[in-house]
Length: 77
Image (tube, rainbow, N blue to C red):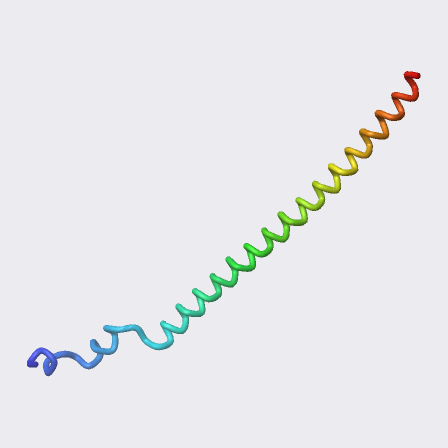
């Protein structure tokens, strides 16, 4: 109890976090979460688009190979 009476009142204010510090921390954390989430969404959309383009290219390649096989089979006859 004598320790509390002799303590400086300015010291007791610096022992904990202030409300503004908590708000800034929460804002930084929510901003980080938003950046991570939007980055993940962008990567997912990009991968989905690339898979779709790859399937289209494979389909076109297969069609081209069939056309070439038919063309060369006609030349051989």
